[in-house]
Image (tube, rainbow, N blue to C red; front, side):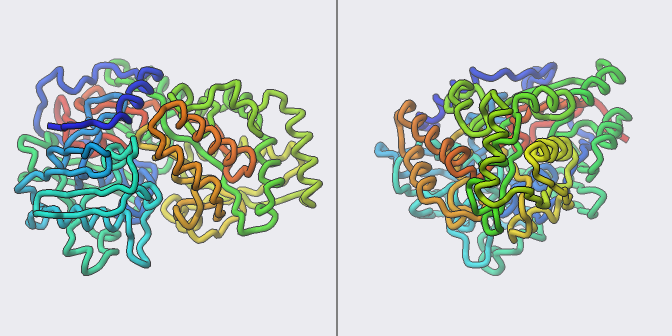
Length: 540
C-alpha cells in the first residue's frame, strides 16, 4: 500500500523502545466489539473555538475530534502513537528524492451535510493551515515551512511538493489537528469553522451547551463501514479535578482522556476495584514559563536567565510528582527518547545544575546587574487546575527565594489563549504538548514570532530559526542530535527565551466497560472514538 516509508519512522520506533507504556485489559482486537451505548467523559476545558487549525487545547480535540477525519492518522492500536496510518487517504507514495508526496483519497466519503469530499477540500484545508489568508490564524503554520505547494491534480489525488527532504513529513500529516474542511465553505468564509461543525467523521454534531456539555451521535453513513460502535458520546465540561474524579467514581462518567494524579488513581482503584482499569504512559507534554519580551525588564536576557536559575527542578520533581501529573526533569525532548539530552549534559544548562545555592547566587547577581533587584510581576496562569495550579505555587515560591515578588492571575481556560496571543501579560504559563515525539514537531513552537504565531515570548531569533531548519534537513541521526542540542542550549541557556518545568506523566483510570481505546504518550491522539465500544449499557 505504501511504497516508501520515510526513515523518520525507524527513529521514532526506537524511541518507543525507550519508554514504558502500561495498559491492562484494553487490547483493541482481543474481544468482539459490541454496538450501542453512550460514552460519557469529563473535559476540564471548553473549546475557545471549534477550529482545530487555530487552537492548541485538548478542550477542542476531546469533544470535537469525533466529527472529523484527517488525511492520515496515527494507528489507534499502536501504544507508541508513532505509526502513520490511512484515514481519508487510502495510500501514498514518495518520490525517490523525497520531495514529492502523492496521496490517493477514498472515494464516496461524504461530509455531514451530504457533499462529497474530494481533493479540493484537502487542498483548501492544508492551504489554510500552511498558507493562511490575512486575518486567519493557523497555530501550526510554522510546522510546515518545508512545504512549497499543495496540489489537487484530480478529484482523488493530492500532491505535496517540498522544498527539501525531511524525515518527519508523514508524521506532520498525521496530526490530529489537521481536520479536513469543505473547500466551498472556506472560500466563502475562512472563519466559518470557528463556530460551526461540518466534517466527515464517525459522529454527527447534536449540541453544545456552553458550561455544560457537548453531544455527538453515531453517523449512520460513515465511510468506514461498521463503525463507529457507540450510539453516541457526551462530553461534560467539568473544571474541578475533584468533581471529575467523583464523576468516574460514581460511575456517571466512563473516562477522562487527559489524565489524573497518582492520588486520584489510587482513590479510584481502592473504591471501585476491578471496575476500574488503569493505563499509564510517559506524556509528551510539559509546562513552560514564557516572559513577554515586549515588556520591561523581560527583554533583558539577564532577567530571564535569573528566573530559570532560581528553579530547583530536581527537588521540585520529587515533591510535585507525588501530588501532580508531572515527573521528569526535561529539556526540549521527552527524557529517554533518541534526541533528548542526557542528564549529565542537561545539567550544564542554566537552571539544570545540581548546586541550587550557587545558581540562586548567580540569579541575584544578574538581577542586580540588570537593575531589576526587588523585581515584582504578575504571573498569568491558565484556569485548568491540574497541573497548572501546583506548578504555579512551586514557581512562585522558587522566585521568592531570589527576592522576586510574584502575584498570580488565573485566566479562564477558554479566554486564556486570547490573553497570550494579544501579549496582555508580563510572564505567563505556557505549554508544549506534542502528538508524537519528533524534533520537527516539538521545536517549531520556539522559532521566531514572525514564523510561528504561538511563540508567546514575542521574540525574533534568526539563530534559532537557522538551527531549526538545519536539524529538520539533517538525515543523519548524530548530526541531527548536534543541531537539536545547539537549539536547546540557545533557547534555554544562552537566551532563556522559555523556562521549562517538568515533563508530565499520563495516568488514565477508566471504567472497565470501556474497550477499544489505547493510551499513548499524547492526550491529543485516539479521540475520534471510532474504535471505542462499551461492554454493556450506557452510564446514567
